[in-house]
Amino acid sequence: MTQDYTEFVTFINKKTGIDLSLYKEAQMKRRLTSLYEKKGYGSFRDFSDKLNADQGLLDEFLDRMTINVSEFYRNAKRWEVLQNRILPELLKHNSKLKVWSAACSTGEEPYSLAMVMSTHQPLNQISITASDLDKIALEKAKVGLYAERALAEVSSDIKRKYFLQQGAFYKVSDEIKRVVSFKQQNLLNDRFESGYDLIVCRNVMIYFTEEAKDALYHKFSQALKPGGILFVGSTEQIFNPSRYGFETADTFFYRKV
Figure 1 (cartoon, rainbow, N blue to C red):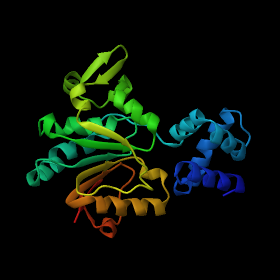
Figure 2 (tube, helix red, strand yellow):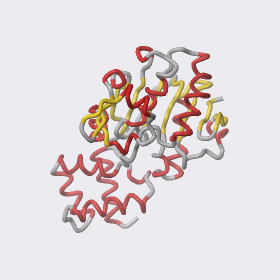
Figure 3 (cartoon, rainbow, N blue to C red):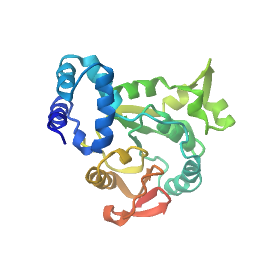
Figure 4 (cartoon, one colour):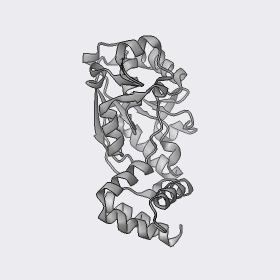
């Protein structure tokens, strides 16, 4: 790391509790250099001075450093496996599942989860916790208004049932929104609750270093109850699941032994 960036990493850790050294350096540096240059700053040092003085800029920085690219039912075939194989198996053992959508971004994932779970249970029996580091993303998630492109994988039946069209946008129905509670959380630093039946964390671990991923998989394993499932993204296959107390339940689904 250059000294300029090293000092910036230290400043951000003290200021926000976020450890940028746990993210892949080249990607993060490129992302943040682009941001400070766009804002007219010449170095990480200049940028940190301004971030220290301007809360609005700090919020924008936090929004930029997190990756908010999402859509409903992303990689639809995996959601079909969740609906047809994984959930029925979990519900055999417990009708009230403890479910967490980790790094939920702008809400497409936990709302998809609620819709999939609604094929097995009434909505008033479903409760999902959703968390993300990014406050701005969480505010968008709570509003639940999405461009049509985010619904590319949503069936016409589900669209009619759980979305209200508003001009060029679609709003998630209040009955689905009530099922999901959002909170801010730093996956790398914060302690996790335990006793989860299902944890969904997709398309975020690819941005972390191998050491950070290793620590996270251990934390997820500890947070799951025996028989609980971790559902990861399509580029995040765990090649040594037994290291974390998992066995493969299906492609990208891991069961705690």
